Length: 200
Ligand code: IMP
Image (cartoon, rainbow, N blue to C red; front, side, top):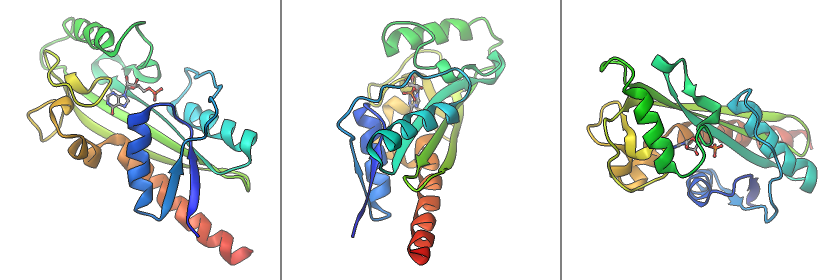
């Protein structure tokens, strides 16, 4: 029987990325159909991911997957980090413009950036599993491209000469921080299922 995991996100592009990856491990991903009534904190991505997943596990009594991610600029001491989605009110474009303005205050060589993602799977049998992934690169001078979301138009991954928003979705997903975090967590989950079957 195919195992189902509920995904604590309202973001359709994140859900699709997660669904496509977990399917390869014979796990089906499902939207929970209820609002994830969780206030994201400022402590850590892992804590936020765990809060989202455990909300579903405690409400519905199911295994659930939560994700939290952000972008960090080392030359800005890791800013915007856990507040990437909300350090400026408004649209993704507004936040890209605000980040580019901050970058102008730095030396021209200080454009390194890293995307980080944590995925937490909370288990109905108790406990949780954590996966981490990162994608290193640099911030472009101007936004370019319209694929993806968030900071994709201003981020160029290491080894590339184009922003993520100029790459086809599949190519971005094959290198993304989220992909690495999901795979790490799902591999642990598959092991957990095997162990659970042996014990029961
Ligand atoms: P979350 O939805 O609370 O995880 O917010 C993460 C925020 O980080 C998003 O709103 C984006 O601004 C940014 N972010 C995370 N992953 C990506 C990505 O793959 N591309 C572009 N921006 C991202």
